[in-house]
Image (cartoon, rainbow over all chains, first blue to last red; front, side):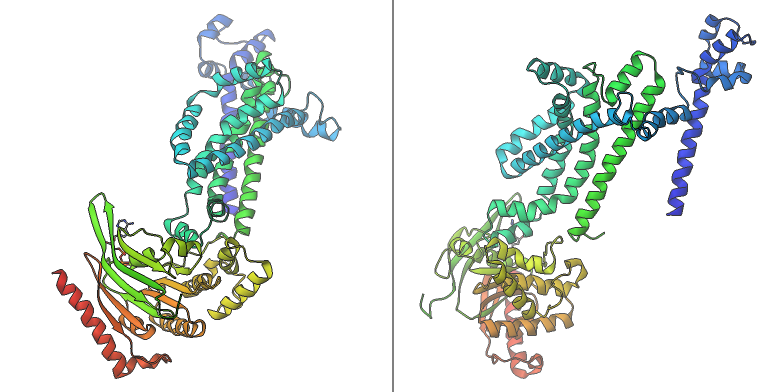
Length: 310
Length: 262
Ligand SMILES: Nc1ncnc2c1ncn2[C@@H]1O[C@H](COP(=O)(O)OP(=O)(O)OP(=O)(O)O)[C@@H](O)[C@H]1O
Ligand SMILES: [Mg+2]
């Protein structure tokens, strides 16, 4: 346990170190610009000459100006402390002052995205399980559904999402539902694949046993196939929930939406607010970790209750 | 059905599996009557069709020729009437159900009432000597206990016929002796008709009223040996001359089957 923690902390520290180091060349042009305006000597002396140089070369030529790469208003690459400060200011701090649901709060935007994610995940999982049950029980469905399911996933979601949004908008649907549909579109596939495998997991002998009891197909499904598929289902759900989150975020991009994590990233990029983009990005990552972690927790408890060997 | 009609009747049974490597003649011209209360053992070299024959009786396999009746019905009708309990070579308990839950499985499927389920589970657990283990999960039990649980599962719904395919094949000698004794007592108490596949000559002689010797390629019956031992059999009956004599005849029968093959 301690060793695990130690190695995790080492990796995190290494990433943060690299990140800080990367800030220097990334923000060096702006740093020299500001230094020159403040009257400091800069090499090379003109902005156009500097633009010819890469960030690393510029950093090497001006070692005394590195400090200026941090704490800029609109850095190309914000430093970890800037992102964390912004993240805290827009979540914890606002929540403490009772403004968790204000339009500037990432808690609010996360909730908008989360609700679409969960709704889409529920749709997608339901659809996936129904399709898998159909595929396992009907040869016709096995032959016809699977190729379409695979084909559906080869279309880039970035190309498809705007079409879905526009079409649904024309019939008066907007906001939550279209995003949830994109989420469902991404999350049903891992569930179908996992559940088909899971429902087919019982061996010949276990199926023969059901036959000797003269069990109906429904009983075999309910008492044998479904319980046997649980480990597969949970593995799929973990992939499915992260796909759902991506779907919800992508669904917010083409609408010019003003609410949701995707919208935060988009408006951030319109106005060059890199800190805002990065903090929305981190909020999404934290959300994903929480979602996957929650499913992992349910998985462990369910499988334990089912007596699966730990 | 009157007393003297066989519970299981096979007439000129043929079964050929069509495989990619050509047809496999698993059963040829198998005829056999099993009467009510018989304990019939099937013995023979690997691949001679013992399992296949049991599966035909259980309607898990369709014969390509000949007829079988079970309780005067076709095997499939008998299956639908839940005429038999089947014990597979591996215990095959569901890992997500407790021992009780596993025994309850056929009862749930057959729609028994709750109190009756409880009663039956307790009874069969006692029958196979597993009282107190009902709440355990299969992996918490030894292989022998798991196999007993799977027998309890097959007994729970009280079918008159019990079909067992090498149920003790994977167990050590001592456990096996113990289970043999228990099975014999159980058969005596319940007067079920039992079909029992085994590779062990002593096991076959110790348990059965009749021993069916089979030989491979194509699988057929080469000998049916009546067991003259008394119904009450302590374990040390296996050292008596009478027992050894019958075991000798079974061995001869097996050898004859092999000679035919060369
Ligand atoms: N489903 C099947 N498809 C094709 N061939 C099969 C099938 N089941 C059994 N066979 C073949 O039929 C023959 C008899 O098999 P069976 O399982 O009845 O033998 P067995 O006497 O039970 O052998 P063992 O003692 O090893 O269990 C074997 O040659 C086997 O390969
Ligand atoms: Mg066999």
